Image 1 (spheres, rainbow, N blue to C red):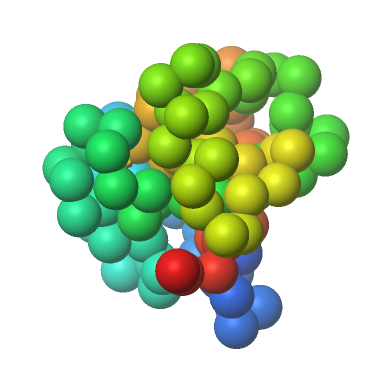
Image 2 (cartoon, protein in one colour; image 1 turned 180 degrees about the vertical axis):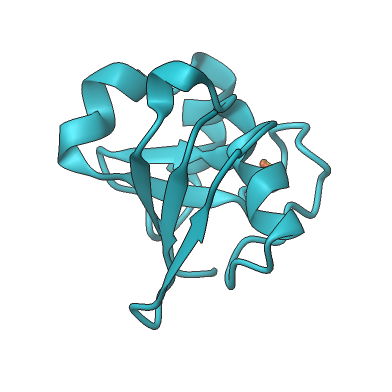
Length: 104
Ligand code: FES
């Protein structure tokens, strides 16, 4: 089973063990501040915006085209930006650490 750590904007960490689902679902189910998942995971709101920490970027992979298009409109977009709803947790990602991006 996989563990994920969310680093909130206030610097506090939320560690979720046995994490199942996509990162937005995991965050909202565990009261991670700053992730609301307003569109329900349809890649159309960016309220699940996270930054992938450098050591995890290769494993998590790049955003797909529709995701990139949406992130382009986000003021806080960075090269390591991803939408949490587009990343499915897996055993391969066990230990993943992401930072919650600032809200719009
Ligand atoms: Fe809306 Fe991810 S929940 S884009």
